[in-house]
Length: 245
Image (tube, rainbow, N blue to C red):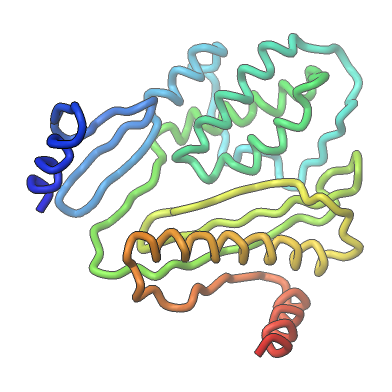
């Protein structure tokens, strides 16, 4: 089937078969009979060497738990070009590292006037990368995988404008398929409202993913389950579903 597809492609486009892909734009692809593992190990080490952090001591988390960072922390300013280069590298690393999405999104808010405090937090993220450079996404070969989503938010995570941050992640079978972390556009008046806004964003993404799977002729996908850890938000979801039904 694959050979037939390649022959049809070669008749329409000028192309050559270079064999199985193993490296592409900083991503390492390891293919086996049981599945595919995608990582950016080399790129992660290149970042550490570029910012002279390859000999640093690793830490277990990318950020300090529940850390609040101000836009204007005071202290000496750092070279914005260096800081922006670091954040850009972190954002590209999130291509295969969902665990870095929140930290990279948070640190990107301070690129206009970064200080030593912001750079120190970014370097802690690099210390986390030092101990997790081998991390990636493992897609196991399965007959059928269920699309499942997870939604969460903090409340008033940004102390500068009192806005919360939404986050979602979707898995299909064994591997992570889609993920995002973004500051909300409105100020939530309660933790339940912040969670509900995050839940709505995850629902919109779920509908888009379902359309993509439909275009790929995966029409046997079951109803998408989105897990939320806030009882009030779950209650609001149930009332909305009852209203529409």
